[in-house]
Image (cartoon, rainbow, N blue to C red; front, side, top):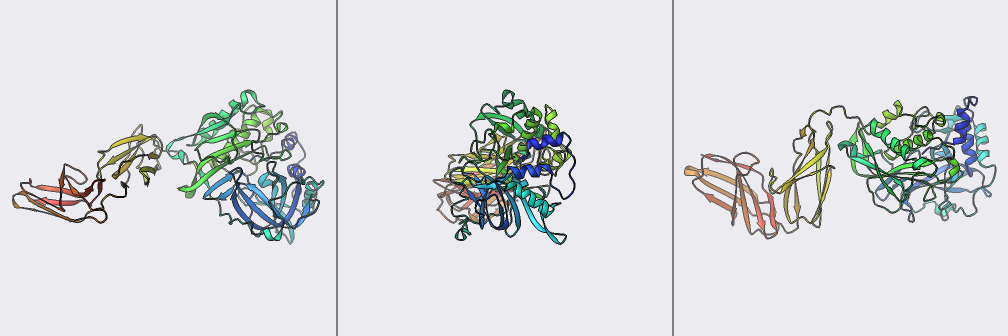
Length: 571
């Protein structure tokens, strides 16, 4: 989110006098004037829910109100609806969104969402202040993005700021603030408490897999060629700075933050606020964020990161906010919001693309401010640069399989070190073999429908221009419910004259119609397959050597899992 009041930024860029400590900077005054109202109160509930009409996830915040500005009738309780949150096993991370904790006292500057006339926070995190005791009196603290180094504002200055928000009653009469949300009976909100969100990233960076960035048809209407040049440069800035590769995608219809669409592994940029999320009076120019899933969490730099499944950027529809904006400011805006779409938050105030406000100097540039050291530092936490690219990749890990009605879904993890450009999946009828074949893919997952019943032994190797990695740990995948189990108690003995005897116990589960004995001259190899009808095998004239044998049961549906390997010594 760039909660940048462009007019205020331009004023500051032209040399306004510096502000002093414990007074209000011009940007705060502009934000207050843009607010429809303001309240002071205590947070009672915080809960996540998916909006049934849009499909987007919102966080609902219930406040007990102690002071209000800008209301015709000050409410005793108030409900806020903030874009982003956790619900139904999925999460939406919105860059720069305000966060609330039950029990904290806050001052909130309020905006009205055009789509459904519910209340949100003006300027996202800039419109939420925390009230705490400071130096023996009550003062307002605005926490920075990292929840540290709060800005302290004197109570008298705070009252002046809140009065700006309440200087006129601007709340629409139809603003319902959620059904019955102002009543004592609605205190539970019929919602489960929202769990804490976690950090998220595009795991595609681990295997150099590209992430497509799509644009709504036509691009931005106020910039030459729809702002395509700025669009491409913004994506390229992040690609050049780290291992995550953002590539130009396709033109598509405008997207909101929900649209009831499944995760598509792409980033969508939309214009003209297609779902009425941003009010015309808001200082917000655009909102960037990403959906993520905790089903695939991996640790990077000692931090667990969930997998981003879809990124979104939505520009506001008020042309006045963009009229006269330089291409440098627009490119910086796009770069900033794409930063949110790849999981980055705001940088500390200062010269940085991910700072909460646009760089005032952008008005004099045709290109974006380059990524600064703080931007690169933040990027390299979830996306560490690859420093050793000489040699083949390390072995993939975490190979897992899910079987549903004959469809096998496989996933694995790309190991750290030299990046993989592709993966080769090998499948065998017994451990160590690839007699079912091998398949090369360029992503660390594969879905195979219509697999015949049987047991498949799978392993995966990573490949780049320097060669292939050792194979991953092998997994056995069982397709079909009527296959026989694994025989037990396998024993083998060799005697004079090359006599060999093998015995085992029938497997549990469906009855077998026969067995297959596998023999090799080295561990993990197969030199012969011998079908037998009973749970034993007797042979003579076998050459003196050490053999490695395994047994599997078969029936009309196929072969079940093989036993562990044992050594057979023929004297």
